[in-house]
Length: 545
Image 1: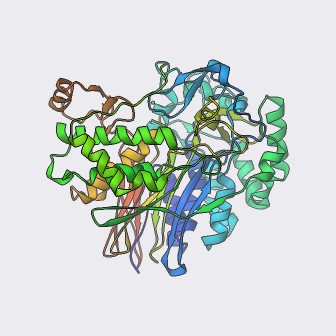
Image 2: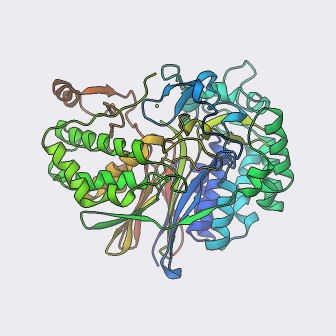
Image 3: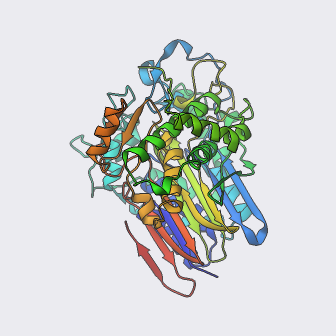
């Protein structure tokens, strides 16, 4: 028996999970309780209108599964339905821009949600608590309301006009419920420290706690959802909700410097992360100065090659072939590394005319079970059914409106997810449990976090806090803590470099490191979260970044 720990971007949610661990719940119980609270206190990042996946490792039961509860395109969707409306693509490749933002805001933007069914499936298979027990903290929190935190307000106020995307504040204003709960009497969006009360969501959670998830997919709530969609031009119907099923997959495995790594298969983004690590394993990363020009250059060129392969091949494996084994094969990645060593530069092709809307939980319990759960709205749609209180996902914007491509629209199809909940094993035991929100930045951020631990010997808090870089386009994006002399040197080499105004930028890593049964956690300072350690004997220790 060792320590237990939970890490999440929201203090209220992390506390809920820690209390479940203190009461004897396992890692799955804690993760589900935490996830429900996240949907209350970070409602544009996650919620029962969203989707996700979780990696579950339970050695005592011989369980190592990836539970997939991704959003699915409506059964009424068609590959060519938006072909004539295409304007372009976001610079980070996260989504596509259509005239009028119809795939981003409103009921047409919504795919069939999977989160609630995923939570129920996980609890039923692997948990020990009752359904009402894991929902209780979220219901209590919803009744109290939540205080607007700095990152929440930043996201609400984000100006995306330069990218062509719909601003979050417009999505908050889209529905009657949104206008009532997210804005002050003077019409301005609520600010840090303001209280958000959502009595409709409280009542909805209470109904689901009593009636179970079938209420959402086949019962009264399903009927309310379908009626609202029909009234507002949405495509989700009773048939979509009734047909929704959770899937289970085996992890995809990679290896980095003697550590075995398990992560999510397509349509999630675990294999791009593994490919990036397999490329960079051919260089002595630990011998470089962290954040130096050569370190950044190697990361960037490897990321660009990863991005090219991801853009070309990523999709729902039920509809397209995704050659994972070939793309993460050591020989193939060695050839990509040699191309970098030769001084060649990769080009990332994107349509001309972008941080993302997700959250994560890492949990380890005293029995040695581990859970990495990433869930999201993809991007909030702004659509809220009157009386239900939760916002739906806006995942239709993730589909490619051009037919015949890996990410094209198809009825019931799962759109590629950027999630990569991951467990790193050392000597056949969990060593690092990690995940992140952050859209297209997740896979490269995860790889950097893992390299920070293995190559640079960082603690978990150091690993998630160290300045990161991104190259998921032809531009190298850098954290504001990367030295100016480094970006000057890269510019002299002919690279386009863009500096973020954020000191902690590009996805938000949340992880646990386990050494000899002792857990240490790290919550990325970019968000407002925390790591809480639950001692195997008694007591709780919390660490904040």
